[in-house]
Image (tube, rainbow, N blue to C red; front, side, top):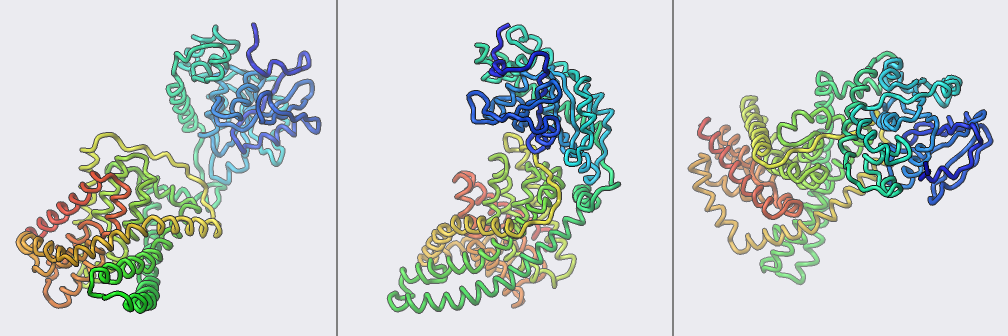
Length: 619
């Protein structure tokens, strides 16, 4: 039969077998190649590509190395070269990373489905013990139907067994459904390997044999193969703490609810102490009140008041209470920038250490009930620092549906650190019952809103597909670089929004619209919420900045205008209230106008409805 494979043109000594090394990137194939071939190696470009392949001799056979690939296909030059060399093989030495069987065995099973004799080198066995794993090699060999030889390449352990195993190489156990599909087209191609690639929709192979893509079975085959590998790994791999390093044990403790939840609470407590206490109070106290609020404010006022009347519209717009040159830079640089830097610093440490993916995996099942997956814990955690910043990070969620639900929950039920600090200071002295009443109410609204949105919104949430890297000490330069880049991007995006917000609020204040809105709220405030009419003004201030509203409530409570139950009703309302104007601007930027308006109006309705029901129940 005519050979369509470019490798057919290679000069191979008569009677020599073509032994091909195949495996994922970074599994140690080159060490095996060098051990088999010694010094006599030819390196040349594969025909029609810039990809180098290495060819050498082992006894009377020819050994060929291939680029590291995750599957035999034609998605790039490396995969095309690996594919054509593998299709030409008489024996394949498949080098597998023993620590990552669930990843590497996908390629192994594909090679088995191609019907080529295989020997599997189960490499990095020294890492298996350190990672607290145990692999049943006999069972693995039985499941795959090929010889599996444990090796440690850097120590040359198992190499002699590999060399002897080539003579015993045999095709393994193909997936029956996949074999049936390949058998049905085998008469149209040269080899069983090409038949498999035809039904996997490999464009190059189809073109090579002048065939049409009539089968479209790639996704079906990949799913079968993935399920098969998961079954094998479940049967042959078990965890053991014997010989496992402390980092491996700690990584497991972070995933087991009994130990992971206390660890998470400790991590969140430390995060809050750093961001919510040290940065939000101490650092921001210096940057907002002294550097920006005193030095910068006096400087800018000293310059502008020479040319502009403070009482004029332009004066209000530029240097008034909500001015473009006063409020915008003071809030942005004095308040938000330290919080943003602090949170991105913590987030970068969690990412680099490998802890953040474990948090996501831990809370995934819980958040699935709210229409989210474990990744949503990241913006939720960030929301306790700054809802504006957290709204931007909802971009990492997998679907438009999830991004809407997360943004709604952030804007509704997550108090930012500035507001949280005032709330804690106001509510803590009122006793444990009041604190519990407030906390339970907010949690119920959070859970109920997410559950309802999950039920009524069309579509489904994406699954959590996340790699769990080994725990490691973060590299300081990486952490600082990530913190700098993300903080810089945030300021660049949020800056213009603060300016727009300052202009809008100034216009509302100058035209008297703020007072009119406050008067319009009074019947709801007094009648439904059973609160003094003065509270309406604090709600308006809460729109401008969340902790302004909470601080206003603090003043009313200290004057004896609010009793403890009125305090908790007020705090529930202002927590569930629409987020501050900076967060509102970001929400309108990140979501569509329709979605943003829905979030905004929905927050108003849920806030007053919840606070009103609570008022009717407790007062």
